[in-house]
Amino acid sequence: MEPKPKWTRLLIWSTLGSTIGAGVPCGYCMGVINSPAAHMRAWCEATLLRNYGLRLTPASLDTLWALIVAIFLIGGVLGSACAGWAANRFGRRGCILLSGSLLGLAGIGFLSCRLLHSVELLLLSRLVVGFGAGLVSTTLPMYHSEIAAVPQRGTLGVCCSVGFSIGMVVAQLFTLQALFGSEQLWHIALGFYLVFMAICFAPFRYYAESPKWLFIVRKRREEALQMLVRLRGTDVGLQQEILAMEQEADSKSSSRSLLEVLRDPKMMLPLLLLCAYQGGQQLTGCSSIFYYSVSIFQSSGLSPRTAEWLNLAAGNVNLLTSLMGPLLMAKFNRRTLMLLSSSFCGLLMFAFGWLTEYSVLIPWLSFGTIASVFLYLFFFQLALGPMPSFIGAELFEVPSRSVALSLGNQVGWSCNFLVGFLFPTMHSLLGFWIFIVFSMFSCLLYLLTKFYLPETRGREVSHVAHLVSRGFHSKVL
Image: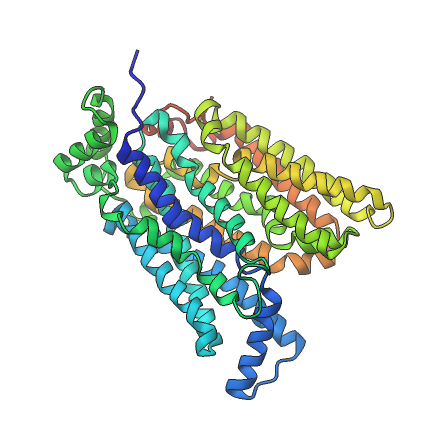
């Protein structure tokens, strides 16, 4: 019986430090823009009048605000597009450090924009922080999966998703009116994540580098083996990991281009799975709840104050469930969790749409809409929330991994942008039917998982890659 891998100090510190220093700030920047929106809109209107004598109509102000919100997601798409190249060029750790530099520059821009009376600086900072978040969302799960032993891979793989969830809730707290959400302090709220970065990036040079990147991409094999011993705490039982890396290094080039991956028929099914999970995560309705839950609650007959408190409570439910992710991924199979998550999310989104439609006529049905949202967030974080961020690291071998994860994240960020930007319009046009559309995407993910996702827990990536190498003819079970 093989000994269980140790949780060494280097492994724990590298995971926690990179999650708090990179994952939490990115989640923070996603959630920070909602509560101080009224103050920021008023400031933008007054600043443009002051600087250029430009009077914005309500429609023009709405367009400007939509751009301020959406440009973060555009930056995420661009960052994801560059992440594959950057992760191979600078290393997984180096790419995270690069993203930290971008987040730091953006934070300084947020703190300065109000003092400098510059709407342009606010927009540029949102674009830059989105670019950094795109790098993080691609590289951080890859980094965690590659420094972990096979039994630890699921536990560490969800840490990026947990970091994003923590950041969103912290942003909700720090943008309360009693803290930094006021008219005078909203710019401090936008840049407050720099505190987390300062604490966790200070000792960054002591974090581990990915042994697989050193061994396979850079061919620095002796350095890779030394790093592997430090991460595992012993040189006993490393033969299987070393053999797996040698097989990947000998059988393929050190890294592959996007065109090579797209042309390879063996990559068709894993690319489909990765892109479907990344995009489907957004198309199942989570973004509509994260961005517009307050207005959705109000449309079902609840007061604005009640809707705001319920939004904060929903964020905490999302966070608490996400904290279960490392334990769930360590104890349960990926397929089981994804089948459970996608099926219940589909049912609950259907119920939420139906209850929202009729709660105006039957007021007590509003309790059902609240229950549907909370239960949806619970089942979403079982698998649909955390799994898309790291499943690519378990489907693709190292030469194809960085560009595949980059492509998957581009799809995810693009779908996030589409839902976040178009949901108000689609909701006004389709009514509750938009939630039925979301539930249908959950059903599609359920079917894709049932027939084509192999179980990856506890398996070497080379074995999983072989299982999905024959496209739709693959015998994944």
